[in-house]
Length: 187
Ligand code: ZN
Image 1 (tube, rainbow, N blue to C red):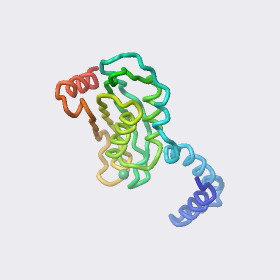
Image 2 (image 1 turned 60 degrees about the vertical axis):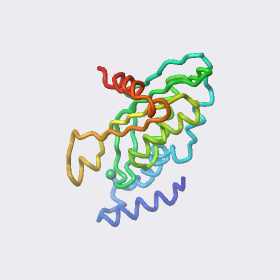
Image 3 (image 1 turned 135 degrees about the horizontal axis):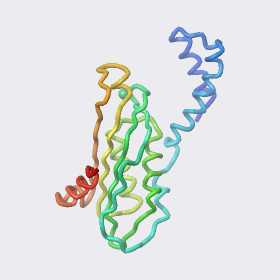
Image 4 (image 1 turned 30 degrees about the horizontal axis):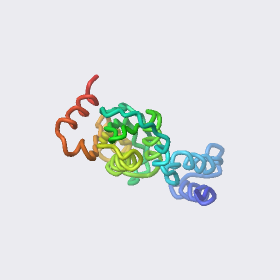
């Protein structure tokens, strides 16, 4: 990331909105924002499929669901955060290839860390797991709250956006899909 340009741009933006970038509270803000962007946009340079390289052929053939994985992302339309939880399910392939649960959470975390829209994020997670594990099927559901719907515009606090992406068995088999949905929705 070009930290120098980010810093200069934040300073310019502060001037443009009518602020004094040299006042005490703001003097260090361009540097802080640049460092923060490095962290919260780390997904721009990461290759999340690498997280799935270390797997195990356990011969497990049943559905695995990792629920309520928290994530924080940034809406590309307003550069305001959206955050919530992701639920990921997959059915291992013939060899029963699985990965540690933390790897699934790591994929969600990495894909979240860039400017984007929730619709693309859910598909990217599904495609990443499809590429990394070659499972019989993948299902991803994301529930999120968007600050751009709460702080501005229609101002609807408490509204949640739900998106899903289904691949393989979850797309083709209604029973499989229903089993996943009931596991995700059970309290
Ligand atoms: Zn937005």
